[in-house]
Image 1 (tube, rainbow, N blue to C red):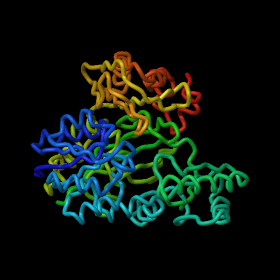
Image 2: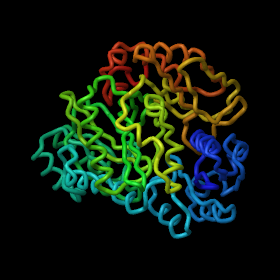
Image 3: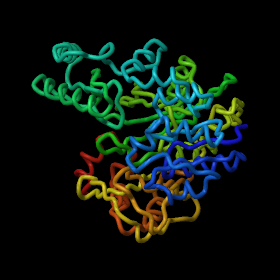
Length: 451
């Protein structure tokens, strides 16, 4: 087992890794920006190193400072969390060049799967179902028109190096295509330093369903069932649940087998997620792979009993994962996660930094809260607005929803606007309660977040 790891992240995921490592007897090093010196993860870690001022580019994205912190503290491995450098192949390569274990897949795997167009081509070769799309990047608007004429409108323009909905545009006719194509390329260049885009046939009202996977260096690979992440705004997830309310066991097995085919085909190791679109006929298509742990991993933990962060650390130690003998897994309950963000849903989810004056968390059976915050803590404008993750579970989806209503009523945060009122409105929505949700649910059903 590893002796000491460095956590190259902040907030709730940094604290989550500290706790998992402590249970395994692994010492932790927290790196932090000057804005985060008093946060809980920094306080709870065994050692701490300041890596720069508040701006991410000077701290959490500063590869040389993070590698230096690992070297001076003697950390054998680095856990990147999610966001920041978690899917940065150059960072994984820098770790390897300095004899530091990157807790995730190797740099070549990140390179191969991080580019969406290349990843899709790889999945097609492996026999994983994919959405009809262009063969690689589309370099001119003329080529974009030719593709759209061939498959028919509407089409989806996507950044090859994208994520989080950036560099993504929909075009419903030829008149829209040129404008959306140009806008997508410009946004992609600004967000990722890469203006390549590719095109796909747009699937109307799909569900976003993903498969959590784990794979080690001993030939073990398994999936932890599926998560439904269809409740999104601007392609950013807000509510996730597991299992998907409309998937039967046959489809679950087929999606799981497709995900494992992908994992084995690229020699993937550690935790990852294969994301699919599920159409109204129950057919699924590969969308992308996330080569890291995800924000919504707790719902998979709750329905399977597998601690994903611990398994990451075990796999990175070169040991066989301890849950392999449980495969194949089936959901043992129903779990739902609500992202509690410092955002104002009544004003287009505008970010609301500030100081928390009251922070009362819910509890009781079937309730988990992952957070790094307490009353008196500040929500800085510099970083992501995620404050906490409320995870509830029950024997049935109805029980989980009832538990969620109770827990959200108990969850009181004052001093900043939050998404708690929005989540309460979702739970009163008849379409959500029927389980028949889709990726533009908020725009269609919630009137831009207004009930």
